[in-house]
Length: 317
Image 1 (cartoon, rainbow, N blue to C red):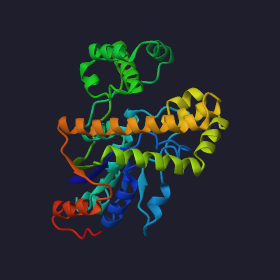
Image 2: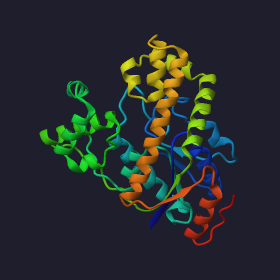
Image 3: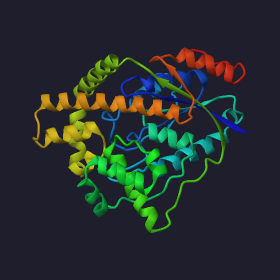
Image 4: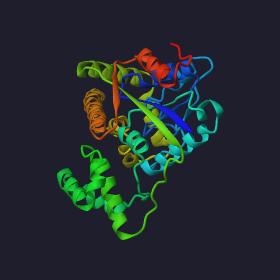
């Protein structure tokens, strides 16, 4: 039996959740989040969970892999891949999905997480090594990249080399693998037919949307969210690893920059991040994953494709 899964990806602030909910509601489907930070409890505004959007339709759209981890702990790519496959195996046992007649949806912007699941990467389960990380942090990024390529060229090819954090994590994995046997991720355990859609939009539109969304979230309590995380015991160092919003706002709360500088720096950083996301998805296509490029909010295009894919279902907008 083949499980059909629609994948909707794209840069930040492009309305992926809303689009996913619209498509899932039309299909009577469920959504698997593909976001490396939405897995954490308490990281709500900063990660764009937008949980209310899942319930603006009737019945609400079920979702998975959100709010499943403590932000004090490190939720790894290895764990995400395993959890995602487990959800897919469980859903495959439901009559509607197991028959292949109703596609499931995977929605998010974490390209590495999406690709690791689609292409069934063999991933090592390696805990963080604080001493090793401290050593790597002292080295320039270009040196780290070259070390990674020398240590494990295949792993380097699957790593976002523009992200210093991910390069260091990959080096940590490569180093551990040379020292001892490490557990590697399992196969999906179910046959999956993937269809991938990526939102494509002009860079100026992305910049405007990023700024508008940031201002909206700041107005709705994002600074208080970060303040609450600090009060709950998360360190500034941990917030550094939980994404741009948490890093920059923590710096503001620590008095290292004023509010205007924080907002300007954060807007610029998120814009650069969204560009890296788009670059990743283009690279994913070059690495052999077929992608259909769509405009923001184009549910009609997806549903028309789905109707043909499943042999003429009752998909509707």
